Length: 150
Length: 422
Image: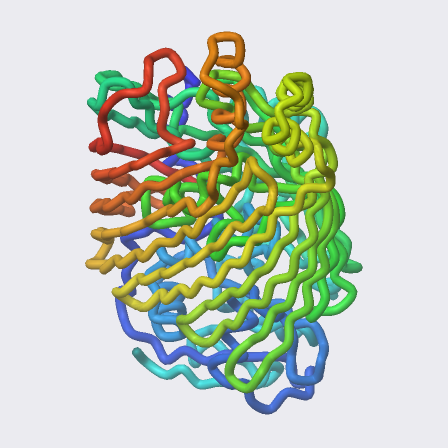
């Protein structure tokens, strides 16, 4: 108990896990798209389906196959994505995941450092789903939802 | 080529070198944390905590957040034990849908001490995205938003409204649950069945600890999730299988040979004693507005109860990183204490007092109007301030075992808290 205040002061230095900084704000608008592997045989996803997958409600593609969402670590794209998808700030997203993680109901999406890495993972995995700027996609992935600029 | 992605979170979720005794034990058991990689099972850490301070100035009353706390915030003192909590969690997952989770929490317990306990320890199997089975020590999912009561970072207020959640001395049970999720148009339906034993240990106003752990619980819940809305209906039956906490009192009442006393004794000893809980709640989380409404009815035919209607309404409005909120919560007891029929003689005084105490143990009739704000000032951290005005007719929650009951029916509680989760 006596160490608790000291530990609390040190916590801001800890790596990000449940959300990016509460104050993170998109620096510039990007044209975001949600992508899957062409082998997933999914032509289109609705916004609510993407919400279910990325918010840990039901991680399932319309084909019935498991969906493995990929999140971007920090940056403007992540804040923009959740802002457009559920209209939440990253602090709200972090609070939401705290409840799900510590009640043992779900784990946050797998996190990668860059849009390039996300595209690569989707291209290599038929269950993966990610959001990236339109400028980052490759012919090896398929756009299933166009979020556009905010 | 990388293998299939594991159902694991961020590779950033690395361990915290030292985080108290809990984490040290978990580290020893798990050997540290590993980043989730694309083709290996993941083992990762999470932690959460709250440093909370509570102050109130109503002499003869002490403020508790639930019946599992052996002491509360007394008048004139700044109490750090009511809301402070520290928790750590270790999760291991495999690529074939099986995962395990262990969580330890240190907070003030029924004896009034601040010590660790095992709050989660279960295996989880997800044979498909729609189905989830868990077995072991699992979080209670009876109340909407009540499945992470120890995690202050997960909710808006300093603490969940005690009028509603205060009955939950623990927010976990030992048993199993099964969850089925299905899309329904743009919405999602989630059905859950759960069964097991709740290791309840309650602290009484007299300063003793009553163990109600010999019970069996069965419940069903249905969630409806649509956009920013989340709604839950839940029904639970809790069967108390032992009358051990009341055998002494019942024997004394029976020995008097007074018919009413013997009748009361028989009611106290009858097993199983069933309590039924029905909960309905809805929550809205928008870009600015946060709104929650929860109603719970606890109904028990046995003399001890609980028999209460409880509920709360919460409204919050987020402006950048600050969310001011207001919450009104109420608990209304509807149980009637049964008379012992004993004459008011000194020889019977302990029995009369004991019967009265047993029958008011769960009784709470109080209202709470609170205003406050949450400020998300750093990654994974928030600061909260809250001011509660509490009116009470009788409260099993708010007492001071060391001071005679006061002639006061209201109190003001000021609270500060810093929460974190990562």
